[in-house]
Length: 293
Image 1 (cartoon, rainbow, N blue to C red):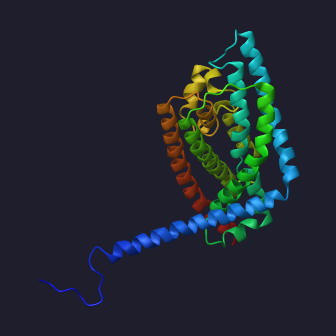
Image 2 (cartoon, rainbow, N blue to C red):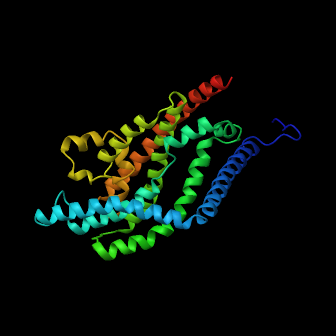
Image 3 (cartoon, one colour):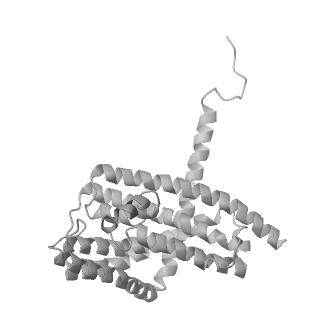
């Protein structure tokens, strides 16, 4: 029978507990970072309540036009088109206004300013990856957006009388999906922003991305109204998981298996895009250092 070395931890006890303690400390640290960053964003955006409100009102013009057009088409087609009645179109585009605002992320044009203005050099000195600050700050801004959106949604509801069939599972999935959509879209826009390390004109690249997103995400029209070939192409791309899926999840258009499948696809694309961003960031920073030297 062997004796334990004096002062040594018993096998299988202290080491795992130390690892667990380190993991919990890391998790608490990241939660604290995001909470603090979001709180800063809320404080900052409250100072600009009026400008934020007018910005949101301006954004409502787009879905209202879509809503009026497709509701009229549905009435002319006997009360339904593409599986949507006028009331369901109203529900789709009213939820669209919230999803659109929740999907706002850092645009590639902001990266042009960061590189040209020298802000990026300071960001590289921070102990955390810059994407965490962008995700946290804009997530905090969403809290202000939701509060400002509620009266606008009530006003649109009174005018257009949406038809909703919301189940408890729809609410749960929508809550998860709306944040998954925000993270996924942020990753792709961040990736586009890194293009500025290789070119000073990111606008044309962003325009191509925006056009594809507009047509294949459910942002312009529900995907069920698109041609079959467009729906098949959309199935291989990430865009529908940032717009169409969260909207249809809330308005009761999807069965439970499609709800869970949609969340799985969001998670898959987040993992893919995050991996690409990590690789592209390393390459971009090396290029930035080389230019600076």
